Image 1: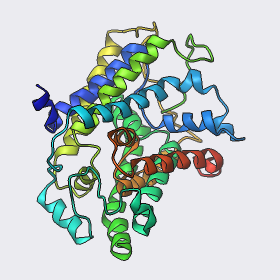
Image 2: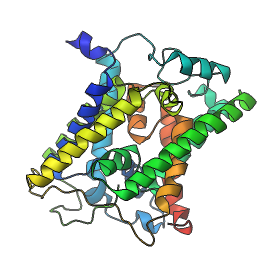
Image 3: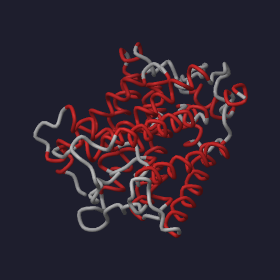
Image 4: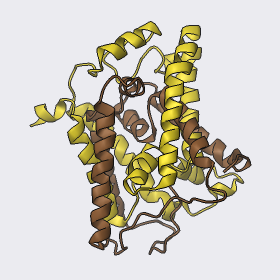
Length: 190
Length: 157
C-alpha cells in the first residue's frame, strides 16, 4: 500500500483528487479553493502598515485559509517522510535536453539545485529564479486576484470569464519566461 | 481569491476549532497530492511550458473537470455546507475597475510561475517537503504580496 502510494501519482489520479479537495472545502464551510489570498492574510496579520488593502479582520476572513496552507506544508512533510522514492522526476527527454543547453541539469531534487538553494542566493541566476520569480508570483497573484488554484481551477470550474482571462495571462507569462527570459538570463548569468 | 463579503457567523477569533481542524486535514491531503503528482517539480513546469508532455495538462484539465462537476452537483442539489451556508462560489468581480487586473496581473504572475517554477500551493508544499530554496521563494512571494498592497492601487485595474 505505502509502496504504491510512494510512487509518482498519474495525472488521472491527481486531477480528481484536486476536484475532491475543492469539494471538501465547499462542504465543510463553503470555502472557495484558493491559495494565494493566504499571502495577503499573512501581510494583514504581521505587517499591515498603513495599507488600506490590509486593514481588515484577517482572523474572520483569512484564518481558514492560513490553516489550510499550513496543512499543505504539513502534507509536504508527510510526503517527504512517509511516501518517498529515490527516482528523479520522469520528465521527457526533450525537456532534459533543452534544459541542459541552458546549464540546468536534473538531479534527484524537485528543483534545479544550480539556481534553487540557499547557496544559490549568492549568485545572480539564483536571485532571478528564486527572488524575482517569487516576488512576481506574490505580486501578480494579488494583482490578478487569484493564482493557479483560485483562477485556473476554481474560476474555470465555475465558468468565470475573469478567471479565463487570468489563466490565459498565466500561460502567456509562463511562455515568455520559459522561452525568452530564462534562456537569456541563464546563459548570461550561469 | 476575492475577499468574501458574505454574512457568516464568525467572531474576530475566526471559525471554531473543529472547522479549522478540518481545513488543516484537507490541506495535508492536498499537500500530499501536490508532491506525489510531481506538479511541485520545477522541471514539470518547464516541461509544461515547452509542451513536451501531457502530465501537467492532464492534472489541470481533469482537476478543472472534476471541480466543475463538484460545483455543478452542489448547485443543482442546493447543498448546504456543514456550517449551514448554502454552497456557492462568489463570482470574481468584473466591470469597470476590475478588468485590466486579470490580464496584467495574470501575465506578471505567469512570468513568476515560469521563473520560479512554482505557484503558491506548491510553494507551501515544497517548504514542508524541506526542499532547499523554497523558503526563499515563499518569503519573496510574501514580499510581493506586501508590495502589491502598498503600490498596487496605482496600477490599472
